[in-house]
Length: 97
Image (tube, rainbow, N blue to C red; front, top):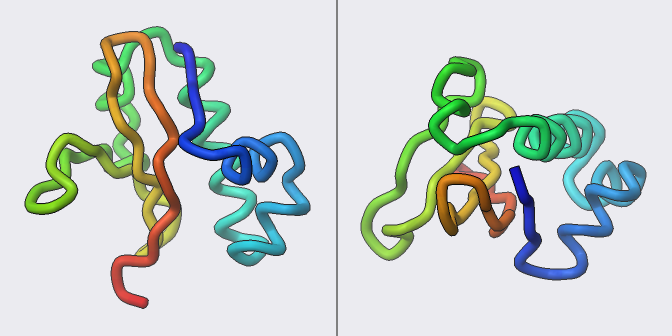
């Protein structure tokens, strides 16, 4: 799948995992890189639903049109599905923070 990034910082944090760890802590940083690799290695968005650990789900309200993947118990990777083979990494958010 083609993966785009909403901003340069998100792309750098994928390319340089140490930056992700500094921004979000070691566990979230590591999982962020893992999840982006899964996105890249997956053919279609529909295939992501087969990974139960990702907990892919659509968002509602002011975030309607976006989807979230689980990084940790309370931290999510938010993506925008552009088409069946393209997503944009939107943000990393702590739902309970």
